Image (cartoon, one colour):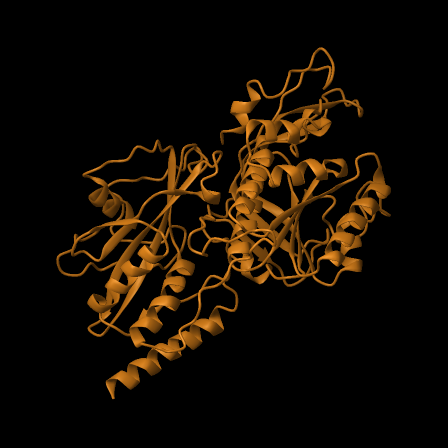
Length: 501
């Protein structure tokens, strides 16, 4: 009788999970409960991480394990972010249990630690295991034999103490990862219940010419973006209106592409780069990413503009490397460029829209993430200086069924911006690092839509936290590219492109 009841309970939880988890990108709003004692559940959890290629260490007898560090985007040489999981087994009742999984993210730069808001890590931090940035998170009550009043980092020190770490860390965060908790549950719970119809792992979006693709768990795509699951779907166009020249937006786009493809959705990233760069971008994405491949990509005049406005930033170049890494692992990620810089005003908007409309209509089964300046992505007619202006976003909205436009939201920081020079000469720009004033909505990336569009035609916002300026990938002299005053690319620049500052 009890075995039947257990199966019913597990099945009920599975059905609840499916109802609340319509997409593998949607973050659940509840914990997963295993209808088995902790001692029975824990060996299956260990097996899950071993099967999925996530090596771990554990403190024997404590029901706590820690995976090894791994980089975002498959170990890209320019990735500055490293992740590991801290997995804690919890006794719920004498006959049930649950997992709490924390993703610990560390960086070799200060991106995760804005001035004045450094995170306090150490054995004296906190009195419970909480999810950073989430109110009402439950305190962990350690079972008998465990250390009381400990944080994820305290356990990290316990496990790490015999070996230490060779990773130089400037900043860090710890976040509760409910999405990972449910991924483990969906595979482990049916095994414990001996279900014959156990759910199969989600298949990633495999590139057509790839021999094989990685498993969903083997790809490190960063902490799940809140709200992305409602937008990422085949045929959808997600327009991101950005402030050019930050590190964070290109990383947001790369994470969006990675998280969507491992959830089974093929992705095309649209970039506001000149149309004549398409061949170079395609060749780079199919290359090995060596120095010669970088040279071929960046010998285009676009990257050597005398007035680099942020679209040719180091972070944008790094993002192309991250997307190349995803393709090299067999994921179905593509890039389309759509800018027509020789056109002006309305003609340019019309041309950019036509390029994207043709792309979407040609391959409607893909999810399109289109990044542009936040003037082009609006879906309402008119600008303060031109009431008749019809932005690219409006033109897309009129021709395509599923278009959502999001404006950039961010916390105060810096950006690389080109603006009219101090004397007000319109044909001369002054480019450099500028303060970008925003609003603090926490550290976590998220997507949020409103009940109706605003006056600029935006359906919501995408939030990237505190912003940091990203300088041009290639610096040139005042005379511009091709002249005696310009610097030759790929001397010092080769090192610049191989690092994430």
